[in-house]
Amino acid sequence: MLKIRMKRDAEQNAAAMKRLTQIETSIIELPNEDLLDLADIFRKKSETAIAHYAFAEMARRKISL
Image 1 (cartoon, rainbow, N blue to C red):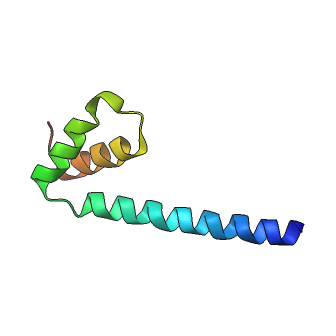
Image 2 (cartoon, rainbow, N blue to C red):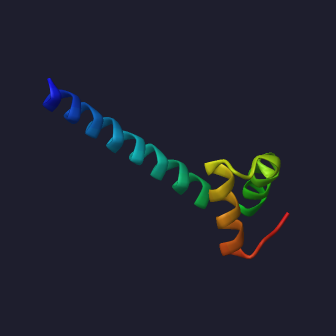
């Protein structure tokens, strides 16, 4: 039973990491206007993961709101 649970947990973790990577890649691939729109949406909730990715990408591109 423990082995099955550990395997299921590992599969869920791998799937979550894959989704997170896809989200990060999607944010990186956004054109500047869309990235700025996304950052504006999450401006007041800057502690969220999406906000962190958006603001990090804006800093990398040297753009701001």
